[in-house]
Image (cartoon, rainbow, N blue to C red; front, side, top):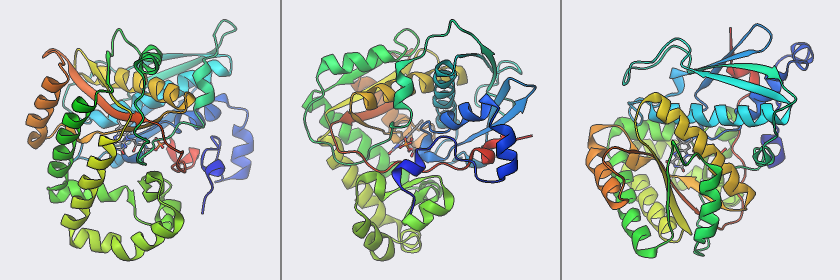
Length: 366
Ligand SMILES: Cc1cc2nc3c(=O)[nH]c(=O)nc-3n(C[C@H](O)[C@H](O)[C@H](O)COP(=O)(O)O)c2cc1C
């Protein structure tokens, strides 16, 4: 079993020691090590990077890791590119480099069509004037926490600190710690998850990155499992072996779905607050920007010892979710011109084990 400190080590690359030695000189590998610690939808890590020249990194989406039924518009993948770029940028500053990030270098992408061209080209320049970002220190400790939180409300002053870490101009931040509103949001979110899991293909994709046992988690080095919900080793073993094994869940999805929806309802009710990010447009560039702002807020939350978990279901882009999405926008008083990009619960809770990442070399393409 991998330990927390092992999984949060950013530079893990064990494929070829000789190759690793040569690459150690290359700052880009170090920065990619930080970037892949970013959160991604279902921990699918949908990134591939090409190294060009001596100082350029080109980021593209690894479409084999995009959940087509759960994320038909690719929103989650673009948000996940934003989180990756934010970590890369913060880590570059910490090393005395300026990261010049050129989004969509091959031209403005067609909305709604899968993007096979690069999402970003990043040129690294040594620059003495760059200011390190204090959020750098939160990269190794940031985590998604799916435990029940304590029920203590997150004060609005703390929410203000989260907002200040984001990008208020282009990605407005909203927050509530009002119990009645939280309950109303909970009802919509649980309805959304039930709808999400009622479709066979979406359910199959949901399970694809769910790690039913610790052995699965160690083998794949992506996805997440019960450990990230705070379940101890013994409960994890019995749940994976007897109650909900991958085989039994795929044979009988209803029982697992009912449990997932009921658990989500309980943990949302007791959270310390719910936050959301929206953008004026809903183009890929807005989604990347929202991902960047979200990562800054998540890093800030972890640096303030706040637990945080995004909830993507009500924002999904397939037809059956349109009406829930619209009701959520109305409930949160989001203007018709804006799109909610991310919704998350936050609060106070003990930490959980970190999720694993694949090796750095798994992300590099020629
Ligand atoms: C765009 C996006 C959507 C996400 N949606 C959810 C979600 O619906 N439910 C959830 O539990 N976690 C969600 N997450 C969190 C990821 O599952 C998490 O980042 C991933 O498992 C890696 O774990 P870590 O954040 O602890 O490093 C989302 C993350 C991102 C970036």
